[in-house]
Length: 611
Image (cartoon, rainbow, N blue to C red; front, side):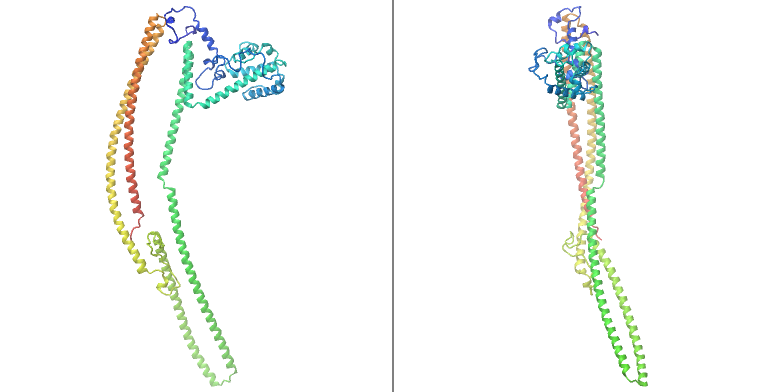
């Protein structure tokens, strides 16, 4: 469709224009539309769907959007004297540094030095001007000479000082270059400001505001192309917006799937952690076992220390016996020597010798008899001592086993949980001579009677726990029956919810079909309006009245459908909330019953089984 038959909005036409006959000549608004298309308003960016537009749209369109004069600068060609110290060498050096800094950070493809810009060549300056003009509008096409385009460009940008063509022909001269350099720096400052404003705007708006701004820009662009009669551009903008929406929807779906997968992984990890035994409980059990082993080893060390002291005492006694026997032996040897000395000085007859020999034989026989008797007595004593040691070893092992059992039952020490102040721990004293000295506890009157009382008490407690367990089993069976009844009720509620969802879906499909019919009817009416636009004003007014009536009917139907949909959603949400509350109540009851049964079961398991 040609731009000469450009569409117009009906709201902007007066009754006189509606009643007037259309001219067969070209429409005057085409020139205005083309003039507006050349401005820096909505046409300053090729597509408002995604991405950043060119700098004119970000600068706001100095010539199109800001109609009033600036309070700081006048129009181009206003003041003739530049208040800036452009002839100052230091100011020129700062301007050159600023220009080089901007060009080097924004992708300028030529080498620049301060010396080169102090007395530049004309082609270098033209290249810089062309680069900055494309920074302002990337889609700008320079059709004429640069000497003609540059003054017009600065005039459109509202530069407050005029730039002559002669200054562009003699760029490097001392009287023209400072002013042109100041203009270039002014343009870079303006570009810096546009970048900062865009950055602040992007940081200030949240994602929802950005989406609304992008959608508004899309509507404005599409409507502008529609008014211009450019159906191809309008279709292209619609396609780009549709593609952007599809990409956002795909990104949202992928993000939702990733989040759902992450939720499933976290749920699996939580379930695995819940199914595994608690590390704290395992560490506590291991700590309790280590403390029990430590107490056992300490008691074993005490017993070994007592045995060591008893053995040391026996060693001292044996050494004393050995010293006494050595002393007796020394005394006997000394007596023997004395006898030998006495015999040596005596005068002995033959009868004395015979008599002494006979006595000697008798004494030797008697000594042999006494020696054999002593050896037998020593052997018997050693055997009895070994038997005593073996018996003490067996008794020590039995006492160690008894102490370990008592420690496991928390009966020792006397301050233990089940000791009740009675010293059940039995220690063996190997140095004792009697039974009461060997063992530190009266077994019959203290230990045995206390253990008998413990046995009777725990037997009674065991009977009570059996009664409680039977009662809890009955309660658990009743709870399970109640849960089964609740599950049947839940199944009925699920069926009702499914039925309500089906009804809602059917009503939604019916409303969608009705809405599609209304939209199709509105499209047909819009086509009829387009065909009847060139007819008489009476037909146009009637068509507009029909359109307004149909639009009112469509809005009323949409409001009614929205109210029905909202009511259905409210009823469905209320039913789902009741179902969820009921499910949570059942789960809490089950958890409480399960926790109670587990606690009772743990108490029963922790109790020692009476022998």
